[in-house]
Image 1 (tube, helix red, strand yellow):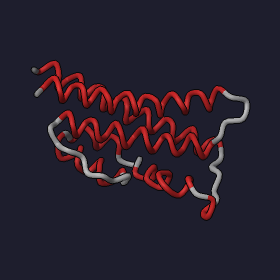
Image 2 (image 1 turned 30 degrees about the vertical axis):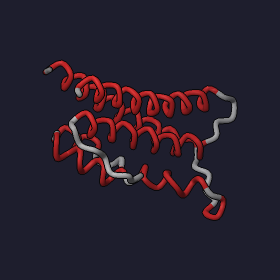
Image 3 (image 1 turned 90 degrees about the vertical axis):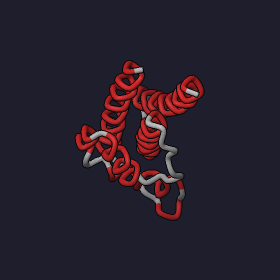
Image 4 (image 1 turned 180 degrees about the vertical axis):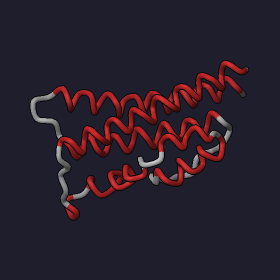
Length: 135
């Protein structure tokens, strides 16, 4: 059972890491697509939080809401309080995907979203490593 859980967590991590890679590739381009960066920042944060919940034997709910996922993570580990303030990423989950609410973030906004996604990645990877090392 533990091996199956590790495999599932690894799959979520790969998907989240791909969101980070997509942002890295955009920043490396001459004209970064900032709405794409912000969307993938939200997606990465969401996936990392969900893989942390999975790692703790909690089946994450189907939501894009970072506030909800972060609150669930805080119930398990108060260190997730460090991520307070990233809840705004939720707005990038849907609103940037459709032209009816046309909005293109400035480059600085995209950089902030990217850095916040990296904060989520860092804390989740640390916590997952700690959990597996206890076994």
